[in-house]
Image (cartoon, rainbow, N blue to C red; front, side, top):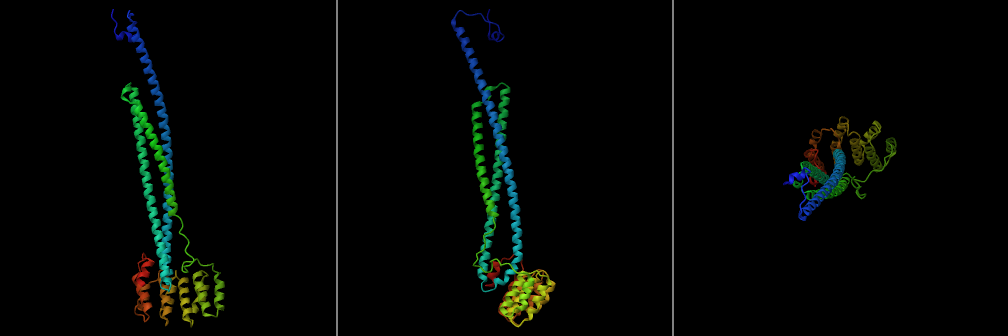
Length: 370
């Protein structure tokens, strides 16, 4: 009776042949089967290890995503700080008019150079902010690439599981898959290290962009910080007791810079607008401009009296005080001075009337005035 290979699979014992060749072949087949089973067990163990490594890679990727969210929060805070810096810059633009008197004095060129230096520093800070935003966009693009690679790895794992479940073990090259998975994990770790270095560089750039400007040189008299001023009542009393014109000028200017004090300072300064010394009158009008810079209705009659003064130096200071005030209609006040006998008064009036654009820079004023 002849038994085929199907009979062996069903458990039927075939008659033993007399030749030793068949027994040896059976032993060889059993050994080969054991080897295949061992290989399958090793493949399953390696697959379990690959699942563990994939879970670790997913955990690291989640940590990278969390760090990216923290970085985005820091970028948002940096943008808020940049917006605050812009607001401070606008406030400094509003205070720019108060310094116009220095631009037309003997040392106006030095002040203009200092202003130009500050403008260059602000431009450099804006460039650093733009570079930081570009770096942040590159980091976001890199995170998107990492997410795409993670999806690719998960897709390949799903394909391998499906092939194993269907019994088609030859359709999947397990060694190649594990090697590619290890390469992907190494690439992910390297990219993670690069991302951390880029994050540190970005933080440093943001700190440099939001750092306060360096202190101004002490040699520039127009930009040195003013010492603490005494109360307005003390200044008013000292002004009433002053006898020398230079002391009166200093006290008037200090009252104007001090501000506040209610109407006491105003009533203390106003009589000095009719003093005999033109320097005292000029200082009084400049102080009135500072005290009434937010009250154009009260300042306008004093400006009209000042521009009618016989001394050209007084008229120049009155024109500059009017230009520094807020809400004051300059054109109807200053147009009559276009034909002033003093050439410097005419030049200042022409520059002020032609430069009513609030976005002009102090450097442009100096260039046009020179």
